Structure formats: structure tokens, C-alpha cells
Amino acid sequence: MEQLIYLELDDDLTTIRDKLEHAKAKRVVLVLPDRFKLLGNQINCKLLRRYASNLALELALVTVDGATRSFARAAGLAVYSSVDQGREEAASPEPAREEARPAAPASLRVKRPVSQPLLTNQVLLALATLLVLLVLSGALGLFLLPSAEVVVSPASEPILETLAVRASVDFKEASLDRLELPASVVGVALEDSAQTDTTGKKFIPDKKAKGTVVFVNKSLAPVSVPAGTVVSTSSGDRVRFQTLAPANLQAVVWDKARVEVEAVEPGKAGNVPRGTINLVEGPLAVVVGVTNDEDAKGGDDKQVRYVTKEDRARLRDSLTEKLKTAGTEAIRANVKKEDLLLAPTITVTVRRPGDYDKDLDQVADRVSLSRMQVEVSGLVVSGGELAKMARQLLKSKVKAGYALVPEEIDFKGPANVKFEGGVASFQLTVAGSQRAEISPGQVLGAVRGKTVEAATETLLQSFKLNREPQIPLERGFLGRLPLFDFRTQVTVLEQ
Image (cartoon, rainbow, N blue to C red; front, side, top):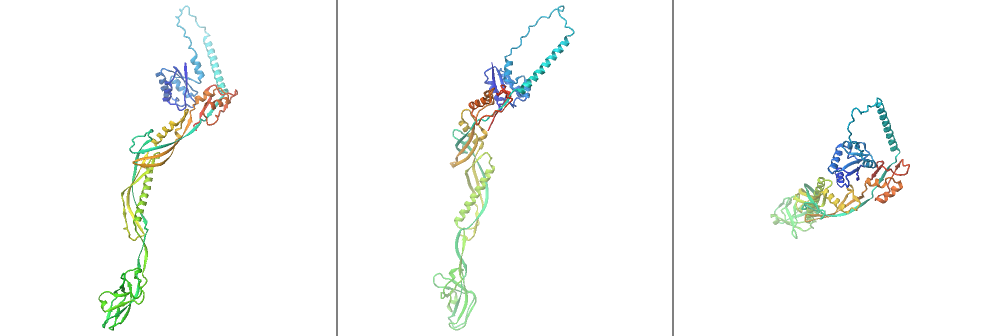
């Protein structure tokens, strides 16, 4: 009794050994698919023979690849070009061995005729001719035999799952049951300066008021009023003026002298009506009187900006946000492409608040904050651990008869990230694909010797396919696919 085992293109030595260990018969025939390169060297063939020997199995190979056949024979393995050939040779009994006979006496020995060598040469020539005819017949048969290619596209279906994951530096290992992942803290230290326009507005004195006053001599002696003499109003908030030139009064009572004055302080407060400047400051007040017989005017205020608490706070917040953005970009540059930075977990710790160049309420158009130092840090989750968790989850959702397609796993997110108590929770959408499992050996067994129409119908009924299989047939003068598997090439598409 023998057992046929059809190998897959991606089988390795470990997979083949597992299949041999589960063999049900002592004679095992491994049927190799086309383009099977694993046994295309003598080392692997010897290892395969050793596996079989350790399992006490009689092992044979079926392959049409010339290199594989040579290496297998050199390693001591039986090799056949087809399954039927292997069965025929396995079923043929060994020729009966003749029992040893005692040598005949010398007197009874028959001498060979002299023409025996010529007869032997004729036999050899006949055998060689027969061999050549057999080879030519086989080649002609192979040329005339039908060949086919069967291309099948396994059905595939999407898988979409949402992971509600928790991550923290306190989690030491990933847990699929609890959907927990260990996280690491990545940080960077930064320093920067900034400035902003001030927004406080107020009016301050700008231009000084000017006018003229009339000094009156109240004595019988001459009086000299020097430039810079201060005169003022007497009611309300006193407004002071000083003379811009000297005034000389003659020794006549009520002698008068007019002189120009200017307000000591700038601003609109210096604009006073006539008759309000009536005081002389200093010792001259005893001998001199003063009055303004016209309005003092020309004093004015101007609007200026100054530093407010809000200006400082806005400047500090904007610089903090600027450093946070720069720190986030620096962290992203240092994080591996496959890893995941949880942006909402990014925090800014101020190490040095910096220095303002203007005091509060100081008149200025701009205020600066220099040498502010911060540390920006955030949580990073390993993309490898996340992918592993996603694969395990998707595998648990794969239907029977399907297999997960690892290269088609994709992540979207994170979304709804929350960070509280050192634990980040977020949602991640994982998309994958599951493909129906179909092996070339199964396809060969389903189509062998059938018409194209029957083979197509069988494949559609036996397997889950995306579309109708393609079966181009060459030299199919009987309208049927080859009976010999090596004449049929099976391609299982992976897309």
C-alpha cells in the first residue's frame, strides 16, 4: 500500500517532514509541483532521504524537472516522471533469482562456437535500435499528447474590525485578551524666544500749551521778572507755566509788561481760559501781579500702546504652542515609521519660563519673551506589537476554508484618543482580507482527463472562486485535459 502526497510550491523541509510523520502507509510518493525548487540540490535531497529513513518509510518522488531527478537519484531516492509510472514499478514483482547450480564437470562443458561474438554484437545493435525507437516514440508521444494550463482565482472577502486599545508605560507586555499594549515615552528638550504686539491703549500728554501773560508792578520800584519765572492757575488742579523771556517793569505802580509763557507739563490740561493764570510763585509774588488776557492753548495728548497682563499671557501661550508643535515634529522624526505616536498624549513641561523685556503697563509697541525652555514628550506604541495584535484578531475572524492574507492588513487611526491617569485609550480600524485555500494538487485531481467544460463546472462547484477559471488546452484533439499531471500546469492566483 502506498500514499500519494501532493506538495505545494511554498512547502519547506519542515513542512514536508511534518507530512511524512503523518503518513498512513510505509511507501510514500511525493508529487512535486512544477517550478518546485526546494529539492533542486543534493543536500536537501539527502536530508529528505534521511527523514524518510528515520521514519522507516520507503520514499519516492514524482517530478519532470531534470535537475531534481538527477540530485534525487544521486541521493538514493527513487524518481518517476509520473504517478502512473511509480505505481507500475511498485506493482511489478522482482524477477525470481535463479538458485546457484554446481559447476558442470570439465568434460561436460560445451565450448562456445567461434561465431558467438558476432551474434552478441547483432543483439546489442538490435537492442540499441529498439531503444532509439522507444525514445523517438516517447518524444513523439509527448509532442502529440495534450497539454493544458489551469488558472484559478480563489475568492477573497474583506475583514473589518475595530480595536479599542489601551496603552501605558505600566503595561509590561501586549495582551490580546485585554487589548493592552506597552507604550514608551519619547521626549525632546527645546528653547526658543518670541515677541508680539501690545494691545493696551491709553492717552499721555504730548504737546505743551502756550500763551501770554501780563505782569503788573505793585510797587514804586522797578522790577525785573527773569525768564523761567513760574506762574499758575489758582482754582482746581493747578496748572503751572513758565516764562519764555524776561519782563522789566518800570518804577510806576501798575506798570505792565507782556511776556510769552509755556505750560510746564505737556497735555491738554495746559489749555486754560483767559483770566485763570493769576499766581506768581516765589518772592516776586509780593511786588508783582499776573494775569492772562487770552486763552492758553496748543496743549495736546496722544494715544499710545502699553504692555498688559493679557499681552504677556498670550505671548507665553503662543510660544508654548510653538514649542509643542516643534517638539511634536522632532518626536515624529525620531519615531520609527511603523510605530504609532499618540498625539493627544503629547505634553509640554516648562523648565524655564523665560524673561520679558518690558514691564507691565510700560509704554511699548511690542513685548518679547526670551529663552523659554520646555520639554515635549508623548507616548509611542510599537507598530510591530500592534500589527501582531491585529493579525491575531483577524485570524480569529477568518471563516473555515479561508486563510488570512498577511500582506493586505491595513490600519486606520488612531481615533477617539483619550489620555487619563497615564493610560491612553484609542480606537483603531483594522482591515484585512481572507482568501479561499486552494492547492494545485486539488485542482489537478479535479480536472484530470475531463473536458474543458466539465473541468470548468467541477472547479466552480468544488472551490470558491472570484471568477470562472481559465483553461487553455493545446493538442487536445480528444477535447480532454491530460491524464498525466505533468502535462497540466496549475496557477493559483494570489490577487
